Picture 1 (cartoon, rainbow, N blue to C red):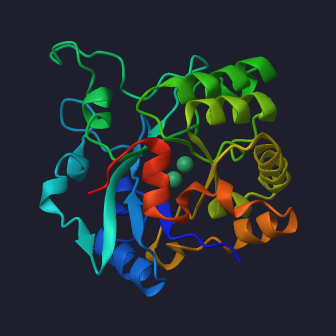
Picture 2 (cartoon, rainbow, N blue to C red):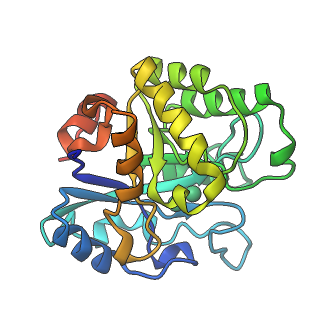
Length: 255
Ligand SMILES: [Zn+2]
Ligand SMILES: [Zn+2]
């Protein structure tokens, strides 16, 4: 049985299609004995709420001082799940918009985040990329200094070079995520297992997450854990074993 004390990928009602508040998520995390959870609501061209002028609403993500750092004994990390939006690995809203004085709205948000997950959900033509394009986009996203974790790389079902991406993540001190929610998509299950085997071979750290869209699933890792046990995945490569271990890997301080 693995020790996993952090759930670094959870959603709240701010995502627009999730069901629970941060208080409800924290209560479930406490019940399960977690040390910390990251609030990683979507920052996405097609999921983030818009303001009247059409710009993305940063919403509660820019108001973390309005939230205790610790709720029910659980450290709440201010995170984001930001979309990868093209084959160059660019992140959502990270182009410079008029009036932003050279700093994009995406980068303004990323500067404030304790945890940044970069994921593919969809972008125009995303299913038409070649094996090389898919590999390169994940490596480019990993090279973005703000990015800590590639979210559910197996879920979109895009073929990519597991070895090359695992090596890039290891070299950069970053993580590839395998989350429980991905196992709800049957075709991604084998893909997740193959990637985990490659990460074990390459010594690449992974993050095991829930990707919970309601409080009931916060800290729910059972499907990933079962797969990891079957392949005898090493505990030392699970980066979210504890807050201290993850902070050391990423060179961060979560005071
Ligand atoms: Zn996602
Ligand atoms: Zn998610």
